[in-house]
Length: 312
Image (cartoon, rainbow, N blue to C red; front, top):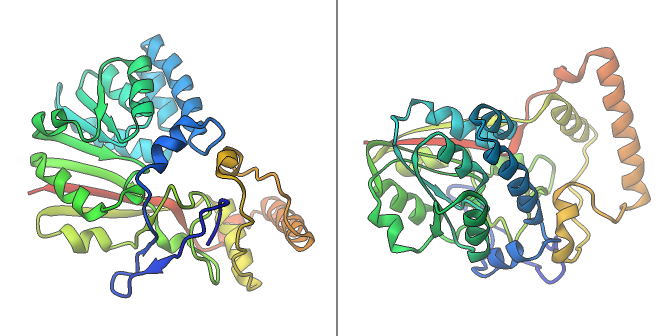
């Protein structure tokens, strides 16, 4: 499979747990953070937006805007029961926008990332609450009341090893929260990967129940599956109904992947694909007019496998 030019990688599926995976490139995340046209350019935009809200010192507005993103809302809602000055750790903090909320709430927070570019940007925007992922300070500050990461677990080389390490750094009763990419959101026939985040960024897709099976002996594990919006579920149902197969992507340069990430690829596809888009838009419009959008079966969202582990 090749989404980006020069990154033609084999996709594997484990016969036991049915998770899908491909190879991991240690250097790619720093590269993505330092190229504004890459998909990680979106994180620059988020950092700028939340820097302004952070400087306004209105935590309620900061919370409201962060909660527009479901994976952030999952973490923020779960953190409401934390005691004041609870010790919190974010893994894969990118440019620090979610950490900014915990700073304003008065928690003892540390954000970490593998990218020096991301850590430096986060410090410049929000203060000295950030460090490299491999810094000794991360383990020295343990044990934590809460550890979380969003959009990270599918990008690491050893997701099980990382999860064990994070559980070890929690207090008994402490919580580990994260969202994972859901392999069940490869909705169509011959659908190899979720199009919203291709390799070399995302390298593992998980199945519901995987985390409970792996860690229920050491933690109370709750998994929830977030579903797509009614409109998106309707589109997926329509494609399944007519037996459409997944279309392999046309590779584009990875340094131009920001538009791809936003869903605005510059190439318009084949005439057949353009015709299908026209039909699909018409069907959705008719569904809105007739109130039938909600009749489609729910479909899992690509990044909506929400996991909460409470350490025993």
